[in-house]
Image 1: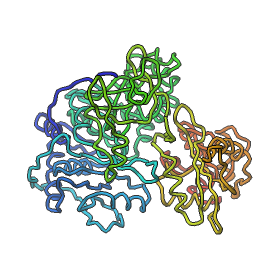
Image 2: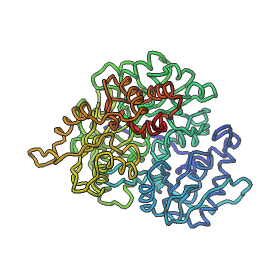
Image 3: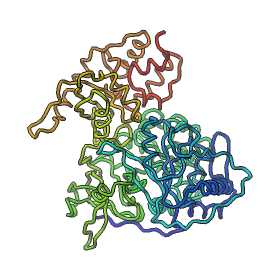
Image 4: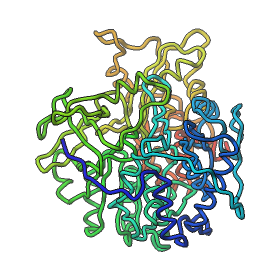
Length: 584
């Protein structure tokens, strides 16, 4: 076990730490957005007015308020307002399918939905407006560090998203005294991570709870990647990039990091080659590799990457525990020795309160074990890892079927269940494509069709209507039956063996002039002789770096700028051709 680092406390809640900063730096710029500056005093006043409005709508302790808003200072003020009311927020992604959003909203105990869009929910909707001049102050609500602050939905092995309830203490333990963006240090950091992801705290609360400035980017992390040079020139000095996006910038514009004082990354296993390239070009610039599932609130460990980290067989370490966080590598309940692989288990103030409405799953994943002779509640991550002799934690892969797809945590069972709910679909099985070091670039769905069932293209189209883009399988194939291994379970090895041949030999070639031109670009970038019209760019071997190059080539070929984020959602030749307007 690695003992947790300890820290002091300026306050015990997220909004308490924010108020601490307001009292000291009221005129400091808290948020920049599209040429607009909002200082700490103004953001605090906005959140007070919103909290008073939420109070009038009945929001209070015990509620989880769904928030479906685009990035803006008002969005951040709404989140603070929810916390001031003693409630928790659930920031949901406006791009998710309407049916999924409806199910999530319906699962949350809230008297109101905060949005400017039509959710189709029977719940009352509050549409916040600019509260300039509104001096109302909400009734004070006592809130402790153990009270819920946020709910995050993550892919669930049961086939339904899991709602993880995080407490104030989990966020406070990190940002009360965060070495990455020290209090009062003048941190200026782009906010690009999706608020529906717990890592959102890294480039929002991590800055606002330390007196820094958040620069809101409408285009998310890929806008950050494309504008990094420009942002640094405008005063940005700190960035966090998901692993795939960090590696994209290393490949495409390594000098863009110049002028920064620290770079953070995490979400997937960091490539030693990319770390090596970064350190060789920027030897004095700290690169911090972070790790942690949502159940441990935002992050559990970190490590300042060293040149020597890229030479060992174990790869780049994920480091040592963050403040008030315990890390244990266990074989059952037995602590593993140095270099012995076991399950990474986490304890301490960062642990979530559990899964909303699922006491059984909470009891199964948050268990009590004996650590140093003391009963200790730990979260079993399902990640395999080991300690090195110098006390650093290394990630060794997954112990279950969970995979990372373009930075998202995905349970294949959720996709299988969604497919089986489509009329005419019998058995279904999902296998990862191009899996590498615990991550994969794409997913392939095999299914058995009942009489009158959908064809593969039709099934994929239906799943696009039901699931967010990262859960839609890149390739769908219909079989007469799923192969079964000797233990009578689906033989996923045989399915995986079918994937390569299926993708290489599929005869569904491009049909229209536009599809043929797009397919030519796919083939050029992927080094293939021909490309099926319905196979995913990722399933064919493409990666995040290839998407950036695909954007450039589409612009050159068609004179049309397709956002990188769109190509992560629309990945086939036919889909891209449709975006470009059909034939001609």
